[in-house]
Length: 210
Ligand SMILES: Cc1cc2nc3c(=O)[nH]c(=O)nc-3n(C[C@H](O)[C@H](O)[C@H](O)COP(=O)(O)O)c2cc1C
Ligand code: SF4
Image (tube, rainbow, N blue to C red; front, side, top):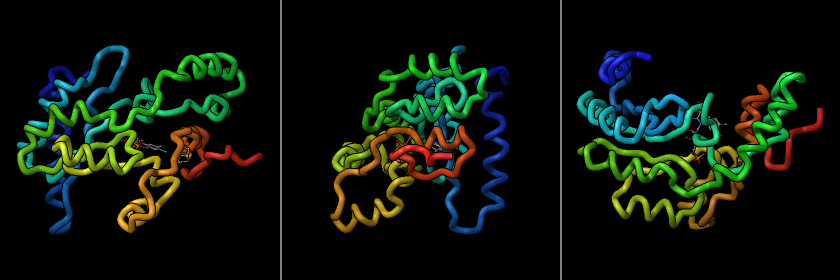
């Protein structure tokens, strides 16, 4: 789809200057870039992401956040951790549930949380970003891992998603020295909630009974 790499990039190339022109003065223009979509037919890969990052840097964005996975083919690559089989199956129409259960069960144990799972891509992309900030998302739960990634120069910033769903004041508590580890267990029930058209919040103890 989209032809050459340059052609696939055209949407961003045209959109980013338009967005910048509309942004209030002082508001950063940030882009989130997939570094590996893990689709059956290969799409974006880390080396292609490096090319896109270089082109994005030429567009003078203010920051680049890198992630991986895709919501359709590889949602568990995007959100590593446990596979909430029951909750995901619940989102399917009744007739799809038996096959859906088999499919979800086959994913169990294949996407265990690995802290900073986009850091290998970060190491490839950071050197070409110049003074544009790089944000790495993906699996950060321990303050020591976050600090290590920044101190080693792999990334400038750490992004998080799941941990903030459970602990919106996490950064404040880290700053105050009250917390060294996010309490999110990466059960992914908050992700399954999206598939069930439920509000995004922490469902670690399970979905409410209907
Ligand atoms: C409920 C939920 C919704 C998400 N929605 C999006 C989305 O719309 N776009 C996106 O790029 N990533 C989305 N993500 C992925 C996160 O932004 C993030 O890349 C991923 O969860 C890994 O980071 P973490 O380990 O800090 O959660 C979502 C994740 C969750 C749990
Ligand atoms: S439901 Fe709560 S504990 Fe489970 S992954 Fe989401 S935020 Fe973390």
